[in-house]
Structure formats: structure tokens, C-alpha cells
Length: 133
Image (cartoon, rainbow, N blue to C red):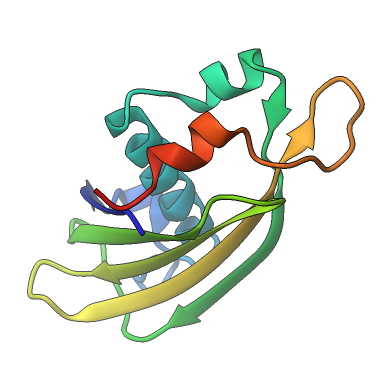
């Protein structure tokens, strides 16, 4: 499936008292990477919602491998594992500027019809955004 890579610099407010990126920020990094991946494919979450589809998070798993610190430049590699059917599955790997893996994550989102608030199938055009080229 489709893969994407983006970088983010760790901001001071994202660190804890030990100078390490607080665990809660990894979910934010994952969302940033997914949002920018979609934008790179020519669409946005806002556009998806305007089409009547919402994508709430169903599962989020995060494994902390090595600490990231203030001012580190992190590369987030995102791979779309599944985009068709009733859910979208994204796998993330985060590396620091020295190439050291600091985190891995897996996020599962479901497609929800905005009008009925019920789980629905992915629109074909959306799933096709992430098909291998």
C-alpha cells in the first residue's frame, strides 16, 4: 500500500520534566502524518467530511523504543495497510535525526456516515487514493 514520509521538530511544550517527548504527543504526530499524507494525495479530512464521511479512531497502539528530546528532528514514516472496507489501518515509524527509531504506532480508524453516525464502507475514490502506484 501507499507510504508517506514527513518531518516534525520537537517543540519544548511537547517534552516532560525529564526533557523527553511526552507519550501523549505521539498520537498527535500520527494524526499530523495522516493529515499531511492525505493532503499530498490531493484531499483533506475536511473534504472527506464535506463528502459525508467521518473517520474516528477505533484503536491506537504505540510502542516507545527510544526517547526523543526537545529540538530533535523526527521523521514520521506512515504506511497505509488497509483503506478499503469498513476501516483504515495506518502504521507509523518515527526516527530521530540520527536514524534511531524512537517509536512505532498503529492506528485504526473506521468510516462513519456523518448523517446516520453509523459505520459504513470506505468510498471507492478514497480507498483508491492509497492504492499502490
